[in-house]
Amino acid sequence: MSRVYNFSAGPAVLPEEVLKEAADEMLDYQGTGMSVMEMSHRSKAFETIINEAEADLRELMNIPDNYKVLFLQGGAHLQFSMIPMNLMKNKVADYVITGQWAKKAYQEAQKYGEVHAVASSADKTFSYIPDCSDLPISDNADYVYICENNTIYGTKFKTLPDTKGKTLVADVSSCFLSEPVDVTKYGLIYGGVQKNIGPAGVVIVIIREDLITEDVLPGTPTMMQYKTHADAKSLYNTPPAYGIYICGKVFKWLKKRGGLQAMKEYNEKKAKILYDFLDTSKLFKGTVAKEDRSLMNVPFVTGDDELDAKFIKESKAAGFENLKGHRSVGGMRASIYNAMPIEGVEALVAFMKKFEAENAK
Image 1 (cartoon, helix red, strand yellow):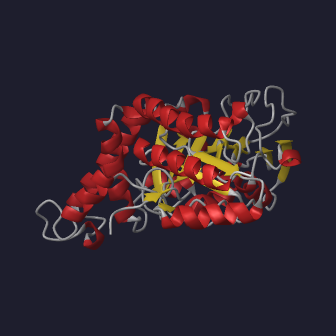
Image 2: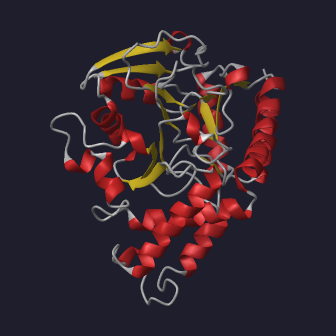
């Protein structure tokens, strides 16, 4: 069977080139006579893999020396608790609620201190990004938290909030490495890699060194302290070794393609094809405020649940996988991450045009 066009929101499509390389090395990684899956994380070979992965990520994102890069486990969900446990010195934090993941992070943080929702787009089913130019930031807030790209709802912060000097923390899971980023604007950036970078099982945390201290909330487990992992260079315990190895290959693939500026241009081109069609279609319509549209996740509907279901069924039969919207919102969603080729988006739009012609009322 040939490969399908996989529009899954995560675990998501990976570059074919990377998968082929990994397949070639599956039984014998560079003359070691074993797979990376079987390799000791204390071995020279793995040390090279993780060090190169970090160096390439630093180069891609232009990460300053005073930031640590940590390859951790537990996904983005574990960061919902790890962040307050490590950063809530005053036990106060401000959250911008732009979707389900920001809301979950906000709810989790409430276990550790006083947490304020300083802005929200819940009033319109998270279909826009609220104005964050003059937020009621708490005087003693330890940090301000955002989810920068909202996978379920298809919105993206185009302008970062004015945090009034407070540390900005951002979940970038679904827009990780999709465009250039000024790391210095954040105290901590993190993301699960299974959307835009690698297989499920790794979360990358980029954190400013002054935020890594032993002064954490009482009772914080050793494994939940950033200092534990920073001091051990992400090797405090057995890391998700194979996942890190694939991430490293994706970083090299991105460098070969010209880095993040080149990716941003490619992603804009891909997204434009789909959004331009949605804007002119008589059957399908996008669900997000135009100025807040994500380049990575594109939700759309026909306005008729039965027709949505028919579209999902027929698109699957035609080789387009995982177009069903998240269970909390319904409709459809095309996730068009870095590794989704432009041909995939063109083929999807051609299929949508055909479906529209056959189902026009």
